[in-house]
Length: 89
Image 1 (cartoon, rainbow, N blue to C red):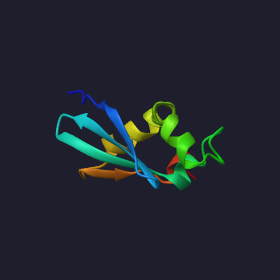
Image 2: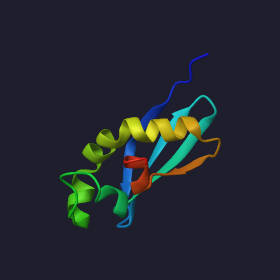
Image 3: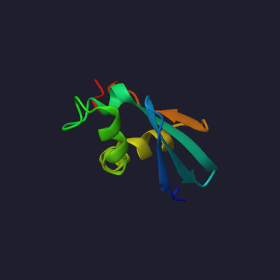
Image 4: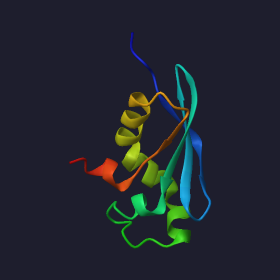
């Protein structure tokens, strides 16, 4: 049976991390993307708070495949995307 995942439209920026919710077959999963992870994504390596807030949809769109894969692998209702998740060893 295939598992469906969908990222909700609302993305929040609190100055430290982006928060987005992913809806799965098992419920809503809260996902955080900290600033240090955002800074690993070109062209956001030196983005300031207002730029992250302005471009939050683009950032989540770029990270979508990695974020959804991490959600699929997790049994938790909270996932945090770390810089190491972007370039696994």
